[in-house]
Length: 173
View 1 (cartoon, rainbow, N blue to C red):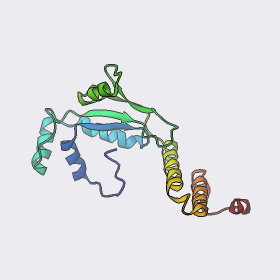
View 2 (cartoon, rainbow, N blue to C red; view 1 turned 90 degrees about the horizontal axis):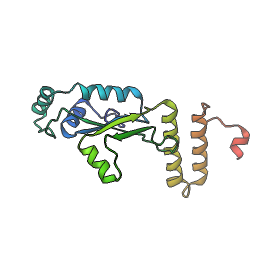
View 3 (cartoon, helix red, strand yellow; view 1 turned 180 degrees about the horizontal axis):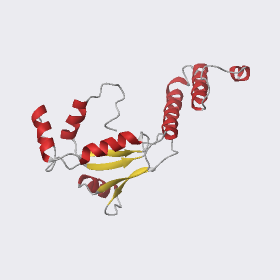
View 4 (cartoon, helix red, strand yellow; view 1 turned 180 degrees about the vertical axis):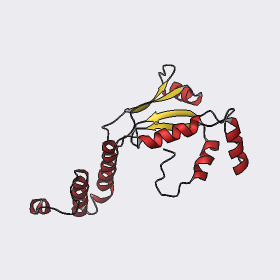
């Protein structure tokens, strides 16, 4: 999602350059906070030819597209755990029977972002699934005891418990 910086280095200047470089934006991300989706959609719908020209002059860049202020907005579930597949999605105006037809609809701007935005529960599920796969893919073979401990910590955290305080039974299992 263009308004969610994972490394705290994403700036207003980055976003303004994205507006010049890209025609398509993810308007509904099923994993992310609804506020990020709403702010992005408000920013995109407020664009006009004058604003794009102002940004082009500011950054000495040529904007992409014939009408670069008209953005195409799509949706995606961003589901990392398989529990919320297609809760957010992209709907085409014409029925697309193949991936090529779907991509042509997207390129031509004949799509709409649809579905549900993210929530705390969906986000927590995504974090858990990402952590689980990291443990499974990187730690399970190299450090199985550490992997088991880390998995228990993540499970406790997501259950609302202190992730570093274990009962005797949990310690020996």
